[in-house]
Every structure is written in structure tokens, then in C-alpha cells.
Amino acid sequence: MCSGRRNVRISLLSVPFCLCGETPGYNILVLSSRLEFVPDDAFFSAIPAAPAVFLLRAADSSSEPYVSKTANLRRRLLRLLGAPIEGKRLNLRALVREIEYSPTGSDFESSFLLYRLLRLEYPKTYIDRLHLRFAPLIKLHLDNAYPRASVTTRLGRLNGSALYYGPFPSRPAAEKFANDSLDFFKMRRCVDDLHPDPSFPGCIYSEMKMCLAPCFKACSDDEYRTEVTRVQEYFDSAGDALVREISAQRDHASADLDFENAAVLHARLEKVKPVSAQLPEIVHRLDRLSGLMIQKSVYPESVTLFRIDRACIAGPITFSTHGGEHAKSQSMESRLEECLGSAPASPAKTAAETMEHLALLRRWYYRGHRAGEIFFADPRGELPIRRIVRGISRVYRGERPEGETVPATGIVSSLPSGSP
Image (tube, rainbow, N blue to C red; front, top):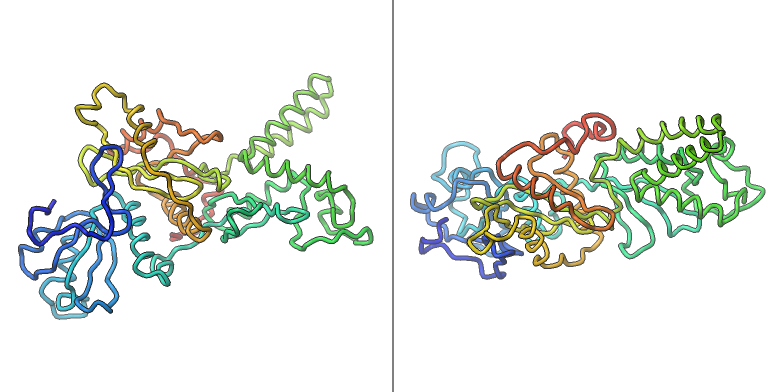
């Protein structure tokens, strides 16, 4: 790139990493390249005219650095560090001492690197600087004596018994799915901590036979726990558990020639399917939200991979689409499996970090025209390697994804216009 110039040096704050025998990516904690600022044409010619995340440091060590991302680093630095022009345009030529930067291959890579850099440089204000909006989730309060479901944007203790499902595009979308789903069950909707009392009059849901009414002991604790288990299985399977349950009941009724009951069950099944069908593919139980994202790479004949592990983003991993001489006898599937198997495990994240990663993932996934593709692991945690290989080819060639993962109508349409 520009490593041949004497005023370029690699940052020594961390060790560069290289996965799978491929081209090195940027450093784990900081940007990969650093230049001493010299206000002449040779300096700007050494800067790549490519997308990048960059940081400008002043001579005064107590000053805050300027951190941003850009689609064209050379043009942006010419604007910030070039000869001053009359007007109100920001010019830092007289203040900047050095520049750190890393070229990036995609907007998502830029956003993720910018998040990591701002989190390091501005630990108290990075969320506001990034305008992060935490993802709406459905929370199943299994730590309550009488569990219930609610919509939240906050994660509690990751080692607690509560379960979280998401991310949804918006709170109204999460509330709609939760309400439509709970109509098929008799789990309570109230938010109070219950102290069952047979003299309690109940609520509208118990009057309508839509709740087992544990508040006045209309059911046993075992019956209520059984119903909660059905709700959990429904959310865990994205609705498939209830579809299978009703389908089996309908088929059994038909076999017994109870056609009237079979018709009722069939009508109920027809109501369940549209509710589960509106669920975006990305919505999983968070401790099972795993997958692989593919983005364009800044390096030739390569793509960039990001692993999703338990709703947290890890990477980037640079993967060659052609391999080298040593890889001629290997299929791309085997090279990909070897690459992913040799990648270091993602360190455990706090609840706050998980929320931040989910916010970044939600922002990219629900974008109207997103670049790159993502593939999710199955319930056993296994990735669809063959589909991923085809996705790598499409991303490398700049082709459109195979099918649309975000439907044009339904739950995703509730994402507000202009939402990040």
C-alpha cells in the first residue's frame, strides 16, 4: 500500500493477527497503519483513495483524537488537512501530528471497526457518538415464580434464567409478534409479581379463557409450568413447535374420523402459520444466535468473514477465494472449515457489549439495501457450509443474494423510516 515510505510505521500497541494463512487484517485493538503528518503533496499521495476508518492525533497529548470513517480516505484528509480555504469548513492542518488508519472493504467493516475504536478512545460517550439504538427483544421471565413475556431493549444477567429472543426491527414489531403469538397460549399477560389468592377477581384475559389465571389459583403450578414450556418451545423453534403440535392433533382427529374437530384444528393451524411466517430469519434465542457474515474485502481475490457467536460479532477474518499453491488439492468447503476451525474463540462478552453488538447487527440486517450476506447456524449449531461457499462467490463477484432474507411486507415493514 504505502509501507515503502520511510514515514510509515505499523502501530506497536498490539500484535497484528493473520488467520487461515491469509492476508493480515487490521490489528485487534487499534488501526493498522500510522503516518507522521507532513503537509506536502508526497504525504497525501501516500494515502490510499479507498474506504477506511481513521484517527487524527494532535501534538497535544491531552487533546481528544478525531475519529471517523470515510468512503475515500485521501479526499477526506485533503479536506481536513489541506491548505485552509476561506469559510467555515473544519481544518485541522495546524493541530494534527499523526494519522492512524485501516482500509476497509465494506460499510459494515467500517462501522464495526469504528465502534471498536470509539469504544477504546471514548469509553464514556461512544454509544452517543455512534447513535446506537439497542435492539428490541422478547424476554421470557423464567426467573419469575409465574413466568411471563415482555418486550425490552435491555439485557439482564447473561447467566440468569431469563431467555431473550431477537433482534426485531422495532419495538412495535416485537410487540406485535409477541401479542399475536401469545394469543395461541394461556400464559399470563399481566406484569405484576403474583401472590395467588382465590378471592382475587381475575382480569379480562381470564374472563375470555385466554389465561390459566394463576392469580386466583384457577390452575395448579404444574399446569402453568407446562404452558410456559409450550411457549418457550414455540419461541425456541420460531413457531414450528406449535405448528407440529396442531398438525399432529389434526391428523389424529382425522384418523379417528372426528372431522369436525379436525376442521377446527385446521383453522387454528391456518392462523398460526402467518404469525410464524412473519418472523425475520435473524430472530433467534440470543444464546443460540450464531452464524457467519460475508463482506467484500479490501484485499484482492478475498472476502471478509465475521463470525456471530451467541449474538456477538467476531472478526474480521480474511479468506482467499482462490487459495494458494498449497490449497490446489483442497475444495473451498474444506478450506473454509479449516479457516473457521483455526480462528480463535471469541472472548466472553458482558451484557452491555452483547447489546451493542446486537445494535450493530440489527442496523445492518434491517437496512433497506444491505451489502453482504449472512448465514445462520441450525439448531445443532452447524453452519450451512455449501450455502456459505455459494454466498462467498456471490459477494466476491458483486452479485445479488440468493433470495431476499428481509421480506418486503409483514413484521419488517414496521421499521420506522430513517431508523438506523
